[in-house]
Image (cartoon, rainbow, N blue to C red; front, side, top):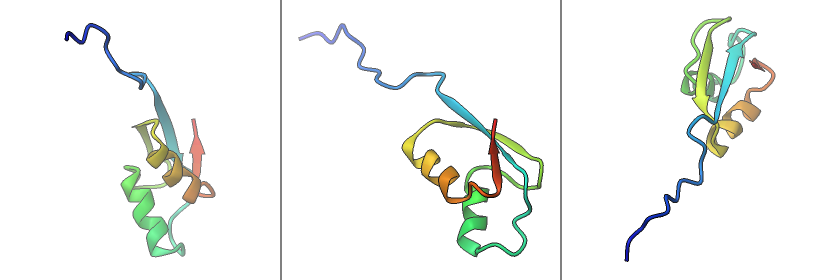
Length: 69
């Protein structure tokens, strides 16, 4: 059996860019950890991430701090 068809169900260019627009000061520790997990440090920093359900869940959790570009 040869696997001539590539079973790449995900798009290679499926990305989402997020920007931290509010400070994490005064937020829950788990929310701060989520922001760091998204690759964001300072207010105004941006990060380009793969568009996966896990990343979308993280964005949803701290959506009040972010802007999706």
